[in-house]
Length: 139
Image (cartoon, rainbow, N blue to C red):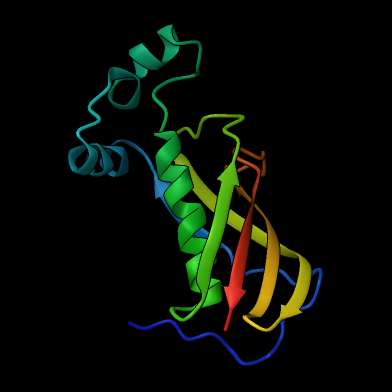
């Protein structure tokens, strides 16, 4: 499936279509297998509790990947992702994690349209887990 960017210029305040994944042991185990990240806090509720959480919790880099998916889904394959940043403020526990985004600024240049985004992940009750930002060049 190929993403294609619309030819319309984004507007400040425009919301990106959310990107949602259900998380839990199965998701974390698949991610750990790819990244060789079999850490007890991601695989065992008791280890998560010992670490001060309500149980096992997902990898921060998995939330990072959800943010990248959100941005690429919105920007399309021809866009250049110039930067992405986030701060892990709260771990994701079992259940849905949704990546959100909103256009915060738009600037035209000879290279294309540079778009700044406010991005973040939320858990199933709407608590922000990883707020951040991204800058995209639309050509």
